[in-house]
Length: 469
Ligand code: 4AD
Ligand code: MG
Image (spheres, rainbow, N blue to C red):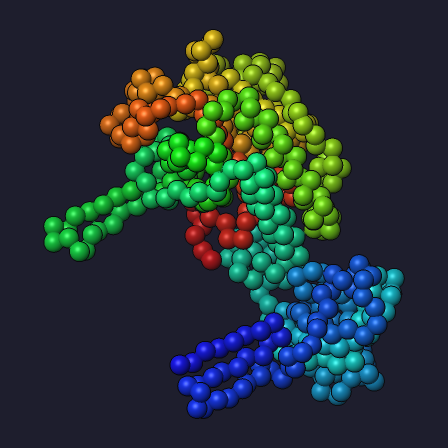
C-alpha cells in the first residue's frame, strides 16, 4: 500500500507499506506557511512582511538590483531583489531566472506610485522553485502562434481574466435556474437524431469488435440537448443543462466554434412569451453577477463597463418581418424566408446598447417550433441578439406539442418521421404546451468581455481547422 498526500504548501509525503516510511519535501518548504495572494496586497488588505509564491511575469536586472514582476492567479506585483538584502545565491538566481520560472519569496510590502498597481515588494529572500526554459511566447505574436501555444498562453493576463468571467457566467446561469427550482439533467452526446438540420452534423463511426459479424455503428455528435430535454421534461417539468454541443460549421466567423458550451432550458406548461421573460431575467442576473465579481477582470480586458451597467429588462422586441424591412432599408436585399447570418446581425446590433429579441420567424426555421395559430406562416419562437455587433446568443421558442402536427412538420421539412420514433412517442402520452431555449455560453462570455473573437474566451477552442492543443 502506498499513497501520496499533497497539501497546499507543497509538502509531499510518501508512505511505503508502513515499513519504509519516508517523508520528502518538495522542495524545502515548511508546511505551516501562509502565502499571501497578490490581489490582497494590491487591494491594500495586507501590509508588512509577506510570503509570496507565483511565476515570473517580467524581469530585468541592473548591477545590484533585479526588478522581477511576479504573477499569481490574482494579480501582478513588482518585486525588487537587492544584492544587499538577500543571500548571494538568491540574488544570482533572481538575475538568472527567465520569465515563467516559479518562485517563492519573502519581502516587505511598500507603497510605490511608480510600481504597477501602486505597491512593490522588497525581497528578503528569493527562491527559484523551477528555472523555466526560454518562453516561446513573447510580444507581438501572431494569432496562429498563440493558438499553437494555447497550453502556455492560458497563463496570460487576458486569458486568466476572460476565464474568470466565464466561470462567473456558468455559475450565474446555474444559480438563476436552480433558484427557480429547475432541475439540472444531462443528455447524451452520441445520438442519431438531428435537432438543428443535417448540414452541421458531425458523424462518428465505430466497429463493434465484440460482434463476430463485425457490425459497424454510427452516430452523430449532439447539436443540442433539446429533443432529450423534451422527453425528460415530462417527469421533471422544469429542467436545464450545461454541456458541449457540436456543429460542423462551415462558416468561419468570430462567433463560431465546432464544439461550444450550450446552456439549455426546457419547461412544461410554459408559453414562448413567459420563457422570454425568464430569459431576460437570466441575462440581467448574469451581468449583475459579473459586475459584482469581475470588475478588475473587465478592466484588464478594456471592457466599456458602462454598457453592462445599463442593461435592464424588458428588452426591445422586433418581428422577423420588421427586421427584414429594417435591414433592406440599410442596403441588404432580403426576402421573407431568408435566414440572417453574422453580417446581418452585426449591422442590426452594432449601434445597440442593449439586447433585442427577434420573434415570429418563418416556418423554415425548424421543425420543432410551433407555428403561430393566428399566422401559420410564422413560428412562436425567438432569438435574442446581443448588442454592440455581437448578434445571436439565444435561440428558443414554444414547441409543437400536438402529435399529428409534429408529424406534419417533420414531413414538411423533408425529414422522415420514422427517424424520430421516440421523439414522436413522447407526444402520445399526455402532451402539454412547453417552451425552451439554448444560450451559447461562449458567445455570451465573448460579448460580456467585449472580445473581438470567441476563441479568446474558451480555454482550448475547437474550429473546423483546429483540434490541438
Ligand atoms: O439557435 P440554436 O441552433 O438553437 C438550438 O440549438 C435549440 N435547439 C436550443 C433550444 O431551444 N434548446 O443554438 C442556440 C445557441 C445560439 O443562439 C448560439 O448562441 C449558440 O447556441 N451556438 C453557437 N455558439 C458557438 N458556436 C456555434 N457554432 C454555435 N451554434 C449555436
Ligand atoms: Mg439559432
